[in-house]
Length: 387
Image (cartoon, rainbow, N blue to C red; front, side, top):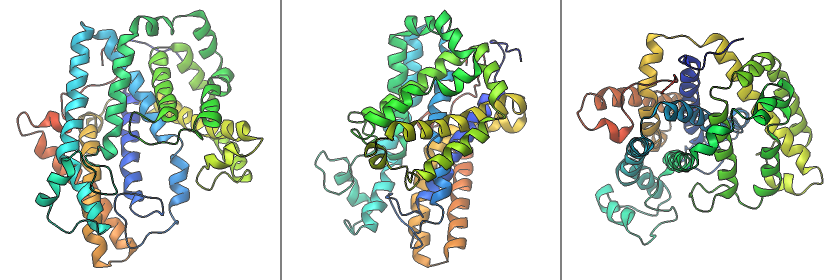
């Protein structure tokens, strides 16, 4: 399968939409599972946790991978790297700052209300929220789900600082030899991730605080760089085209290995670090995640690489949906669960309010001058040479 590195990649537009869409659904699910989250339903149970564990190992990796691809296309076209850096600071930094001090704030308010740490109004809560002193069990002010913006912005700035070196990697003989061999792409490229999961993750649990999140950074920045390296690499995409049909079988096999290893109960890093087979199970976990990603990449380039009206609309809307969604979910869930509607009715209502709230919010925001950039609304772009 021949790849034109100058052609628009509609498939990657679709995969970015899918990645953010899964994130929105996942956060709705977090309202109902037994794992810790900002607010909780009265119908918390473990019933949907197996489904969430199916996507948990690869959903964020896919998002950072696609972010790396996007930066390759964008920096190749950028006339000035300085101006490009400023544009990323605006596109990612402004929604992040606005989110921390305005849009995300209600999430913390309803969290401390539900935990009975605060009984006043949201206006009374705000001074405590922005104060440097920590008055509550949750850290304030906070970026909550917007941590991705902080991380990917830092990764972009680092990438720009070392861009001459990054540009040499995809054209090197060593890299071409790696990505042109399908079995190497599947089984060898992921060895660093297995090492991180084996020895670094048990020492540095995920915090999303940017500073003390070393294992998470190692994972996310590495998959971001891989996305950058393979963006226009015909050898990689040809390898994906050869293996993607078999990748689901490999994912199932890896999943069964993890079940037999008893690590499936929360993908326990304590288990992985406490067994002599910890590298084997870490490698199986990474194989599962990578096989899922390869399946999506292969399916996408075969069947999704075409333009449509829906794609154009969602490409412009999905980032705004991401910024908006969790606050809507938290507020809707907080109030709805008090009515004891039953888990089916309540969950359908929370999901519907989240989705329609994002749709309505985007339609309103994009019509208000100079407001859109605070919610990630900007000119529609895509994965072409100069994304």
